[in-house]
Image (tube, rainbow, N blue to C red):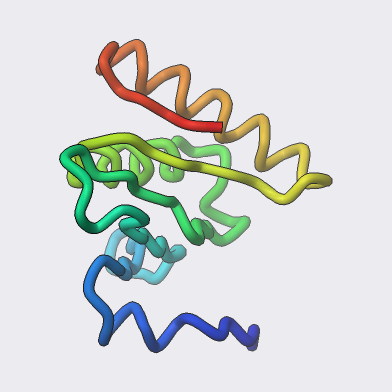
Length: 110
């Protein structure tokens, strides 16, 4: 339904990782992760896209998925939201603060 010009690259280009989110076997969302600095000593990861269907929101699923992704790709992280998307900004602020309590050394860039 939505045109995303880089989607095909997630299956063909190094440093791009696509994930489907499933809840009890049912598709509930997706995550696209991108490594921004391929040659750096410490990787810089970007949460390029993160989407959870509305019927699965406010159940802790998004937080759990984000934490699993952060665990899988250790290093520095860049997580951004669209400027006017206040609910997304609040979500990421809570998720990142919660993750940093769990993993105090985690680094998130603005």
